[in-house]
Length: 176
Image 1 (cartoon, helix red, strand yellow):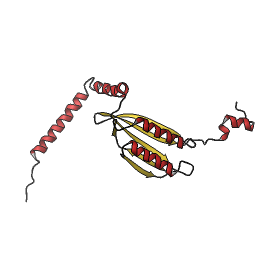
Image 2 (cartoon, rainbow, N blue to C red; image 1 turned 30 degrees about the horizontal axis):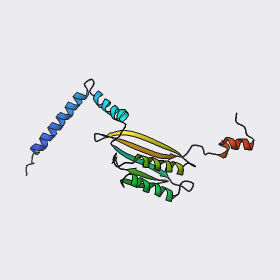
Image 3 (cartoon, one colour; image 1 turned 30 degrees about the vertical axis):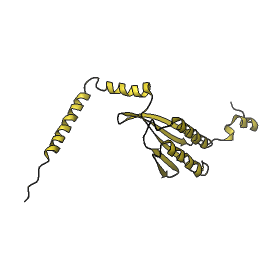
Image 4 (cartoon, rainbow, N blue to C red; image 1 turned 180 degrees about the vertical axis):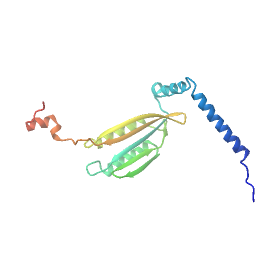
């Protein structure tokens, strides 16, 4: 019967050093004030510097007959493709189209152009949806990434003409 070969000495050394580094990290993280420097660094980047190293976006476009046409959505996606240097993925989902972009450097990102695209999206959905636009700052590879999450949200109760104060006066209904 053939004998089994032992593990390569380099592999064994890597395993031992990895385990020792993990133990050392666990001990160091338990010391008082160990996370303070990291927290201060993150606060500095987020609130004082206020300039992320990279940008990315995640946008959902609901589709239906009463919403913007496929041509309008396609136009917005094309504009986003130019704004993010072609680094985006488009996903067809049930009842919507989703766009996810890659992280791009701050030098390549034109914030004014992106804001103009967001305004056009908001105008396109103004009759049927409100736009939820969240901006998140996250650390990634020793840098700060600003992520824009944009989702048109349909109101819980549909808007009626009766909600308009001018329409109430025309129908003779007065609000208390």
